Amino acid sequence: MLLEIEDITALTFDDGSPVRSASAIAPFGDGWLVAQDDAIHAAWIRPGTITALPVIDPVDGWETFSEAAGTKHLKPDFEAACAMPGGEVLMLGSGSSPSRMRASLVTGSTAERLPGSAAERLPGHATGSTAEKADASGFTVADLRPLYLAVATAFGLREDQLNLEGACLTGDRLHWFQRANLAVGATTASAEIEASALLAAMRGEINPDEIQILGVRRHDLGTTRGVALAVTDAVTLPDGRILVSVAAEDTPNAVDDGPVIASGLALLGTDGEPPVFTEIPGAEKVEGLAIRETTPGGVRLLAVVDADDYEAPSRRLALHLRW
Image (cartoon, rainbow, N blue to C red; front, side, top):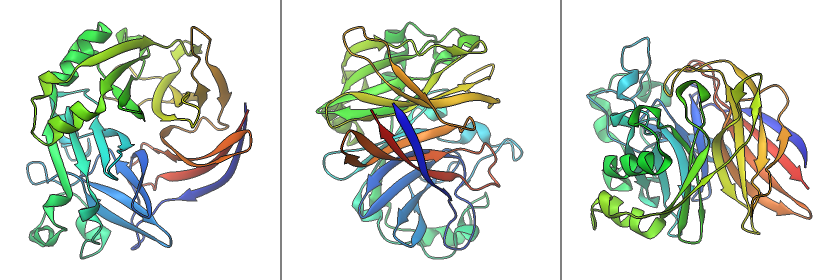
């Protein structure tokens, strides 16, 4: 595979405040929705504008979360975002703690711009002005802890080893990826979930423990200097194959950040074939991946990079991948 970086853009809201900790990206309306893993808002990117959209209510009154503020344990940690057939975006928590076992189904009714600047809304603790935010019917949040625990069991993992960081849709099957971390004994794997059942659970029509896990696959992506190349997001290509973003991050657990040694894209093999890997120069920590368009013999992608610094704007990479 040949990878070209066509453009790199720093992501800032319209008032100049940074889009922080970008962790996933999915098409939404006439643009793209970018998850911020340490905030209750996502960034809605449209031509010429980036606005903040709520995807979950404030947690204990907080809108953003950080280790410095002592609120990191509260963050929803949405690490995967999938466009659903009805135009909604499903955001999934990483599952690395009980507070991160929630999901949010974001609908088009959130497409109203929030009043006030992003800087006024996003510094930390909620204020009275946030009562004026867009209609809360624009998102539905569900606690999916029984499903997360079932996925951990299917992977043969303890609850504290779970770290789900990417998802993509193929027909009615959601492929949900465990991010490998050899330091805690977790290897890369994916679970196949019935998407229609997951949506039914989001809407309260069934209980989360009724969602079936249809299958589990193991993926050997190799290591770099003893650190596992781990899946951070996934997209389904037009021919049905799955392309994943990967990063080798040297971290002792599923919660803390660490130095990124290498990163890239991997085309997963079928029928036992090994994955095909291409490196992203500069060890960019790509955490979100989406398809812009198909091209002859390839695909154009959007990727978002988490700087692991909430004061620094996340970046968007425009990529062209050919095979």
